[in-house]
Structures are given as C-alpha cells and as structure tokens.
Image (cartoon, rainbow, N blue to C red; front, top):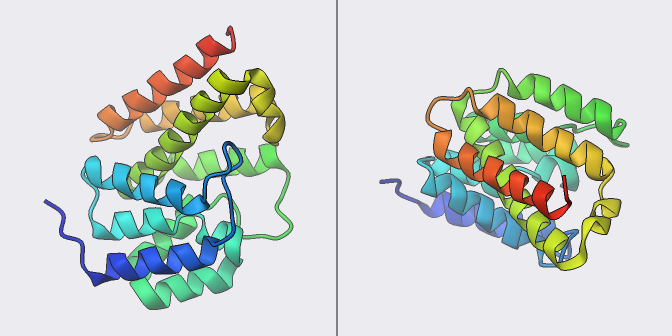
Length: 191
C-alpha cells in the first residue's frame, strides 16, 4: 500500500496555487478537481507517491510557466517527479506548436515512456475522457468545438493513446476503462 507523506501535501498545495483561477473546459470546475482525480486514479491503479505527485503537477510546466516551473518542481520534489512531469507535457514551448504536430510528437515519446509515465498519462486521459463523455451526453457533439483537434483529431488522439497504452504491462485495467469511455463517446456521437 502506498504511503503519502507531507511531500504529497506540499505538491497538492503548490498545484492548487499554480492552477488557482484556472477552470476546466467542460463544466467549468476548478482545475484542481482534475488534478485530484488524476492523482486518485494513479493511486488506485498501483502508482507510488512520486507518480501521484507527478499526477498532481502533470500540467504545471506545460500550462503554468514552462521550464522555470519544471525546475522548481525538480527542486521541491526531485529528479524523478520532474522527469515524469516533463514526459507528460506535450510541450514547454510558448507559443505552443500546432496541435496535430505537438500531439504526434507526444505520442512518439509516449511509445517509449516508462510504465510510471504511461500510468500518469492513462490517468490523465481517462479523467479527461470521462469529462468529455459527460459533456457530450449533456450538450451533444458540439462540445468538440472547444477542442483544437475538433472531434476527428480528439478521437484520433485518444485512439492512438489507447493503442500505445495497450502494450504496457500492468496497465490493462486503466487502459480498458479508457477504451470503454472513448467507445461510449463515439457511440453518443453516432460513430
């Protein structure tokens, strides 16, 4: 059983400060709700404290300050957590490169990622997909208009992530949940 120390508490507080005022695209929930859900999924699927901390901070560098935030994460939580955050970020460059190229590059990196990074990614994508499913059921396929990849690109990306994660030993359960959620999204959309 994973023990959570005061490092997790510190990461939670820092994540809350970094993302304070940020809201989810769908539903407008405070962004910390996503980060808590990702950390919970990581812990529920066998992740350790470092993976849970990286889950709390997986969007910090990408969305809240780039390399400077990544360096601060390294100082606070160590190399392992910082490397996981970097591996989960599709870019630290501002302005961000074009969506499709950025996602394709991230998928290429994910195909060689550690099992820990794959778990963090699976938890992130599962929570995102669950939120998207709720939104599609509530508002219909028009919700994809808020996504840079639109419906086609978003579903392409999820399918590619599922294909990569399907080859990672130990992630069968969470990958199956992700695949089931994406299948439900497609069904609601009539695909």
